[in-house]
Length: 293
Image (cartoon, rainbow, N blue to C red; front, side):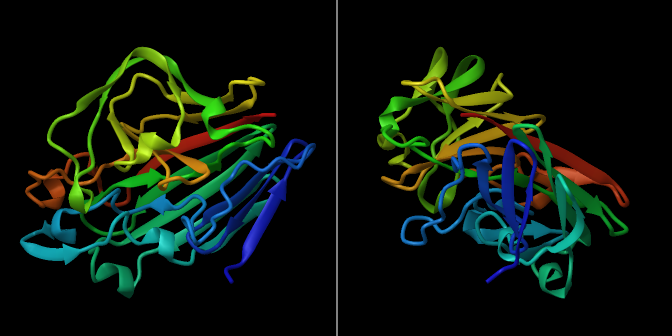
């Protein structure tokens, strides 16, 4: 079993595994209320994987860089690797993954990825810091995939919750096709609304994928009590909402990157949503969860 580290403050506590630097638990210290999905392997055996150095699927699981083909599976490799605990404070944990011979075979870029978990009252902030430790440009995507248990509170039903967007949205969803590729055009979905009532049929055809939402905050709210949590992100241009078929959880996924479309050239430097980082450069993004129970 991967080693797990825990930190807490007066309001919340979290536990994070070294394997994948993956958040395992977020609980209200006063009530013991858990917010993160259990990771039941019979349903979906993850809690909150990091997606790096790609988000989603590649066309034919292959990309080309400087004329050479490379293979990467869906969402890349970081979620399946052991990070080292590089910093521990009473209210913060930092985990680090560095490129190695195994990663360079299918991803030819030297890198260092730090994931920082910081507690601030009822909020946990998760910061990704990508560092290019190579001599040339680095091309990458990164994203979050936290799964929240739903229903959150005992006695509630899944359909008694809704998502409330920070701003009124007019956003189509981009269908996910066979092989995990993104369609070339969206279909209408959010139409002049800031509210999405939840039910398990929403995810029958995989995730709801959005590009360029106006909002950078979503509240998950119990219709009965108004309680739940607020999920925030900044400078993630893509967003996914997903659950496994019939499962008692929901994933809220801010991405700096997206799966290939059916018309992808498979050239890494031309990939939609790809990020270029110069030698010695840093790329930082943060998402957070604030509980309200």
